[in-house]
Image (cartoon, rainbow, N blue to C red; front, side, top):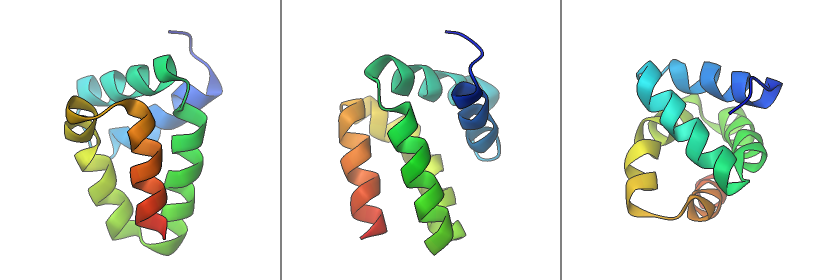
Length: 82
Protein backbone atom coordinates (compact mmCIF):
# COMPACT_ATOMS: atom_id res chain seq x y z
CA UNK A 1 0.00 0.00 0.00
CA UNK A 2 1.40 3.41 -0.87
CA UNK A 3 1.30 6.62 1.14
CA UNK A 4 -1.29 8.34 -1.03
CA UNK A 5 -3.15 11.41 0.23
CA UNK A 6 -6.32 9.31 0.32
CA UNK A 7 -4.67 6.71 2.55
CA UNK A 8 -3.30 9.39 4.86
CA UNK A 9 -6.70 11.05 5.16
CA UNK A 10 -8.45 7.79 5.95
CA UNK A 11 -5.81 6.84 8.52
CA UNK A 12 -6.22 10.24 10.18
CA UNK A 13 -10.00 9.93 10.33
CA UNK A 14 -9.97 6.33 11.52
CA UNK A 15 -7.12 7.01 13.95
CA UNK A 16 -9.38 9.23 16.03
CA UNK A 17 -11.67 6.30 16.83
CA UNK A 18 -9.71 3.11 16.13
CA UNK A 19 -6.36 1.69 17.15
CA UNK A 20 -3.53 2.31 14.71
CA UNK A 21 -3.59 -1.36 13.72
CA UNK A 22 -7.36 -1.40 13.13
CA UNK A 23 -7.20 1.87 11.19
CA UNK A 24 -4.52 0.40 8.93
CA UNK A 25 -6.45 -2.83 8.36
CA UNK A 26 -9.69 -1.01 7.54
CA UNK A 27 -7.90 1.38 5.19
CA UNK A 28 -6.15 -1.50 3.43
CA UNK A 29 -9.38 -3.46 2.97
CA UNK A 30 -11.17 -0.41 1.56
CA UNK A 31 -8.30 0.42 -0.80
CA UNK A 32 -7.99 -3.18 -2.03
CA UNK A 33 -11.73 -3.23 -2.78
CA UNK A 34 -11.50 0.09 -4.62
CA UNK A 35 -14.03 1.83 -2.38
CA UNK A 36 -11.75 4.00 -0.23
CA UNK A 37 -12.61 7.24 -2.04
CA UNK A 38 -16.34 6.51 -1.84
CA UNK A 39 -16.12 5.71 1.87
CA UNK A 40 -14.17 8.90 2.53
CA UNK A 41 -16.78 10.95 0.66
CA UNK A 42 -19.66 9.29 2.49
CA UNK A 43 -18.01 9.75 5.89
CA UNK A 44 -17.51 13.42 5.10
CA UNK A 45 -21.16 13.75 4.14
CA UNK A 46 -22.23 11.88 7.27
CA UNK A 47 -20.00 14.13 9.39
CA UNK A 48 -21.91 17.14 8.05
CA UNK A 49 -25.12 15.58 9.39
CA UNK A 50 -23.97 14.06 12.66
CA UNK A 51 -20.53 13.85 14.24
CA UNK A 52 -21.84 11.34 16.78
CA UNK A 53 -23.21 9.03 14.09
CA UNK A 54 -19.97 9.32 12.12
CA UNK A 55 -17.95 8.31 15.16
CA UNK A 56 -20.19 5.33 15.75
CA UNK A 57 -19.92 4.28 12.12
CA UNK A 58 -16.13 4.47 12.21
CA UNK A 59 -16.00 2.45 15.43
CA UNK A 60 -18.23 -0.20 13.82
CA UNK A 61 -16.26 -0.44 10.56
CA UNK A 62 -13.86 -3.23 11.62
CA UNK A 63 -16.78 -5.46 12.65
CA UNK A 64 -18.85 -4.56 9.59
CA UNK A 65 -15.88 -5.45 7.36
CA UNK A 66 -15.46 -8.78 9.19
CA UNK A 67 -19.07 -9.63 8.41
CA UNK A 68 -19.62 -8.00 5.01
CA UNK A 69 -17.94 -7.30 1.72
CA UNK A 70 -16.25 -3.85 1.58
CA UNK A 71 -18.68 -2.81 -1.15
CA UNK A 72 -21.50 -3.30 1.36
CA UNK A 73 -19.89 -0.64 3.56
CA UNK A 74 -20.64 1.92 0.85
CA UNK A 75 -24.33 0.95 0.88
CA UNK A 76 -24.37 0.89 4.70
CA UNK A 77 -22.92 4.41 4.95
CA UNK A 78 -25.24 5.68 2.23
CA UNK A 79 -28.18 4.32 4.21
CA UNK A 80 -26.90 6.04 7.36
CA UNK A 81 -26.91 9.36 5.52
CA UNK A 82 -30.46 8.85 4.25
